[in-house]
Length: 239
Image (cartoon, rainbow, N blue to C red; front, side, top):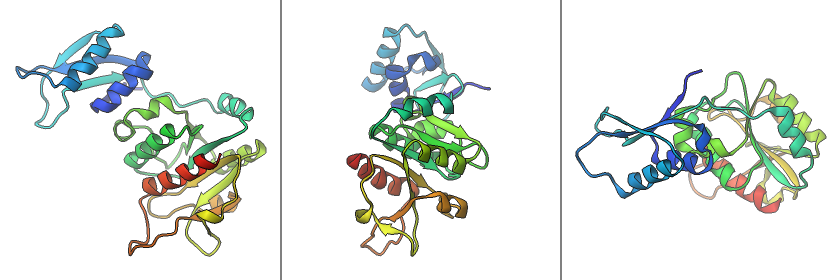
């Protein structure tokens, strides 16, 4: 597997502070212009942890001044993660039913990590993976949040039920209840569907509850990452 190249300053800084062992190399744009205080701060951080800094030429007019190469992304081990989760009395897990856009994945991971979500589950096939775009959108949060690839999403949800998790799916329809009517659960899995089709029928059947966000404006739908942020906040507040 090839190293991952990222140019987002926020992502690079986050990883240098929290997962510096993941950084293979860091290079700074060769330029006669003075570097910004933000870049200087990141370079100082890199030097503090003993990371050698190389140089690179300017690739394009709007390219970022720093480039980091990271080790290939490491997905969390399902068995170990589930064993650790068994002893948790409270918590929220996020499951993504064949999401396709790495920007949405990154945005959701950023929210999930900030709210202390226990992990993000994605299917191995026909689903988005962790890409440089996901690193950028998550400002590096994909590195400090357990992300799990599973062969069968619904089987994984059923396993979580055995560990006392309630499965809550976000969906529109006659079987969905307003978010305010959702009971308070100590352990919850929030399941979000694809950007265009929502949850698959088999996933809908696996959920214990279906919820929707009441909308008061003329817009009748939200981007999956925006809806996920609202639902994750509410579920995290309750847990």
